Image (cartoon, rainbow, N blue to C red):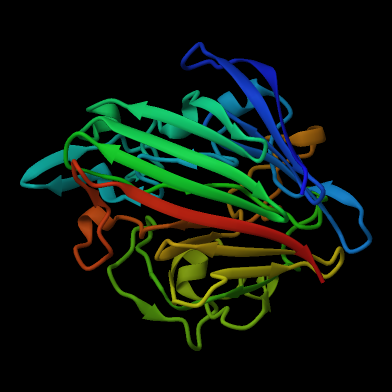
Length: 346
């Protein structure tokens, strides 16, 4: 299958004062637009059942808007994706403090996470773009100099993301992509009619500040049971305490061994999204805090629940939860992880 990679300048990033770019991967099935600011997914153009192509990823028109973004749209999140309680953790008898940018917790790596930086990028081949970032010792309070590599590969109808990280000192790491999808391709429409199936028999209940309690709770007989297809609109207004305090679904699901980890279908257009991952968890977020005061592509407001996220990752607050899968990375070790998004139709 023929594939193309094209690049164009996209202005100067505010934080690093570095030139940023838009990188486009294209084949016969999909067109994916990336940027080196935050190693982000800007757009995915996918056909519906009639062959009509539309962008199914929320985002902005300009680099300046991504510089000011507070929703982590399409971003590679790190060093530690999701939340750390009070921004604090202990490692090898030492205490570390990360900025609390989601009071009282830290979120997605602190106030200046990986999403704010311009990564170095290179063309691996006509279907793969690679992004690298060096996070120095003490960056946002995290120990060790970390080298991170993220590769985006367009393979047929699949966008594959491969993560790689090493460190010079013991540290913690959790990497994910924070794309918001809307399979209608119409960003004025809510995602309530999207039907979800998740290969997850358990989820993590949380405190009021969205930190896991440490329990792995069965989804059975709860609104978190997506082991068979359910429209998300039938669940996000459930009076369940967890749903109410999160203003919808914003929870980590403990993935079973089965793949795909998630499958989404949208009946109006027939578009589908299948997610496979090597990660143990998936944060399912229903866009509860998108704000219509902020406008995205085409000047369309980011209405509440006009996009959903399926963030494949390790569990939130893992450094403070010894029973969770470890997020500790030590010198000589290599973190590797893959996630694939496959777009189809029914």
